[in-house]
Amino acid sequence: MLDLFTLSNLFTLLMLILLQAVLGFDNLLYISIESRRVEASKQKQLRQLGIGLAILFRIILLFGIMQAIKSLTNTIFAINLPGFFEGTFNFHAIVTLLGGGFIMYTAFKEIFHLLAVEHLGEEDESAPKKSFLSALLMIVSMNLIFSFDSLLSAIALTDVFAVMATAIIIGGILMIVTAEYIASFLEQNRVYEVLGLFILLIVGVLLLSEGAHLAHVVLFGFAITAMSKATFYFVIFVMVGISVIQTQYRNKLLANREI
Image 1 (cartoon, one colour):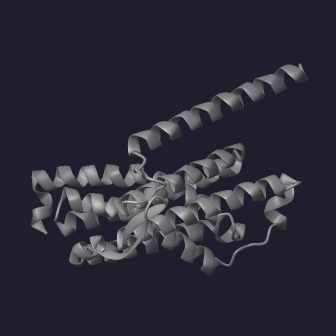
Image 2 (image 1 turned 180 degrees about the vertical axis):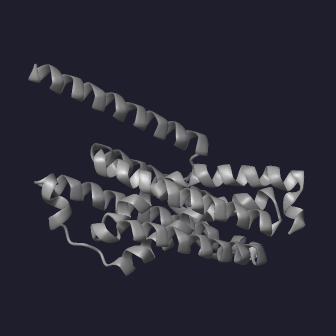
Image 3 (image 1 turned 90 degrees about the vertical axis):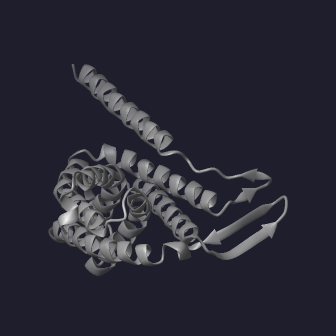
């Protein structure tokens, strides 16, 4: 445990906490949106318990990955249809593809749900609510999928389990604190919920491209490459900027019309 306090490990710990914070934004977005599917009185408890359990399972998953790191890259099955579809799938690629596909499905479902709602003011009351247990299971499961790449990145930075576990715990505490602010912001500014759903959609595309890249997928003769994190964050930055400017411009137009 004393190894944790060496200068090298403390610097690595700081880097891992920053990594958890940056990569955890889309996770928090999913948690905030998913928690709204349960009764209002249970939403805060759901977010806190979901993140708390996810921290525990992340540490267990980290330990398992460190023990079986080689098996993650072993081919489970391959598909070879020359000129149409080729790929060799391992555990990491399959988990990433399934996670990306499910996130895209969730984003599309919620977007179409927003379009189908006629009275937004009554939507929260009339919409069927999820059970606390099912929502909790979804949050914990998706949290693990979101954390898969961050755990592998952490292992690439250090092999000291105590450093990685400490970073996960601190990152989880930060998530618990900021989850309430993000959920409150979305509740008070529902126009940004659409932006959040489209960000989730981009996250799904990111994971699908990464999973296809890990599986060395070749589609119609073209190799699938992973979307870079720099491209992903640039797209998010542009989307947020457009949304903020559009909202301000709309409010200005409404104010001028009232005058």
